[in-house]
Length: 338
Ligand SMILES: NC(=O)c1ccc[n+]([C@@H]2O[C@H](COP(=O)([O-])OP(=O)(O)OC[C@H]3O[C@@H](n4cnc5c(N)ncnc54)[C@H](OP(=O)(O)O)[C@@H]3O)[C@@H](O)[C@H]2O)c1
Image 1 (cartoon, rainbow, N blue to C red):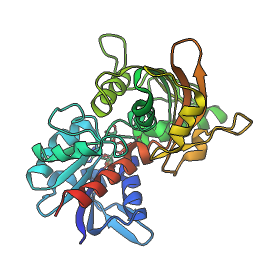
Image 2 (tube, rainbow, N blue to C red):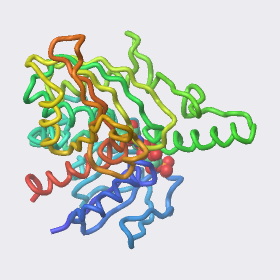
Image 3 (tube, rainbow, N blue to C red):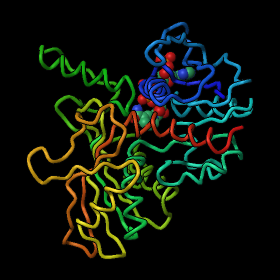
């Protein structure tokens, strides 16, 4: 049996990757519908190698008869249209931040808390976590099960594709402008991103953290364990695709680098590449288009009891967004939808 699937935000970075991922993984579809804003009506997007879809207007679309909606049009747009789609009978997997901390909406990473999907019927919406949270919790989960993590200190190195297609265009245009001596213009980012790094993602909160940093804290608690303490510093870097994270953990149980490496090697969704030699670790440009969360540079932190540091890299559009959403859809189809 196949499903009628609507992709909302189909012209965007995440929406296009969702269409590719659905096709790559042979998700059982009878029909795929591409939706975006009014300005994209009639634009064509690819679904797999052979199919071209004509984009329709989200605002005018009637979701009756749609089984699954994969939604990434931004938080404000989702706030209006995801409940509308759910009311029409669809199950919505929402990639935006809008519903993530709603107690009646499960926040799911299939390798970590697949059981949470069961409560989707309360609102008909399942939230996909923030891209930086997803890759971190996939790596933390097996370590937490074995060594009980108490505290996480994380610094992120986040690519511009995390800020949508406008972010990618801005890095390209600024880089070009610098080479040809044109003025550098900025809109998507608060400072020049070409040849620079910016310690500011999403808005500032009253306590000095940014909202991106807050999301990594509260989402990790909701997905993995409310007792884990997380302090994050989130940084935008001039990389097109792939987020990297420097992660330091303190555990209740003694932990060695060898034990951690072994646990991570056997964990779902994780690939360990850790050779302690030139090129024996992973960097973002190497993982664009790949599915796993890659872990490298595993080493003990001698400055605290039971401490470990490691480096974690993943494709933010793939596991950080589209793949995670499609994996949720696969679990829904397998275990919940008739
Ligand atoms: N990029 C990531 O790594 C990532 C990861 C996880 C979650 N997310 C979240 O996913 C969402 C989209 O991210 P993105 O990177 O795909 O952004 P993007 O490249 O800027 O794409 C935005 C998409 O939303 C559509 N859209 C915007 N306003 C709309 C409206 N009023 N009605 C209908 N469609 C509208 C756009 O359609 P038009 O082309 O017609 O404007 C486009 O398809 C954001 O909420 C983001 O936080 C992103």
